[in-house]
Image (cartoon, rainbow, N blue to C red; front, side):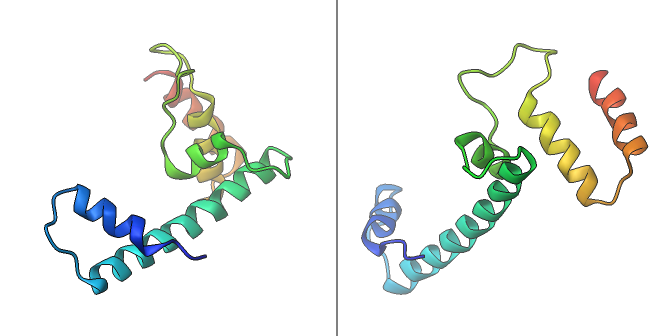
Length: 110
């Protein structure tokens, strides 16, 4: 992946830096690319769990942990993103079905 350097430099400058070294831009580009790769891989896994070949915005939201949207549920309602994320994380931790179900009982009481 190749994130263009000029927009990254502009972001740093817009945040208040008077001058930005090329090394600083390169370092931020490397970080952003690595982070984007990790998010993309997680999002692909979420799409697979949902039995889809298409990665959607909600998969990216799950992968980044940013689940607030205009459709955010009212207080005390389950957010589907949070539920799916919790199931996948629990399964990745090696928790069995029974443990996952028990965690939802706790999740429900929050």
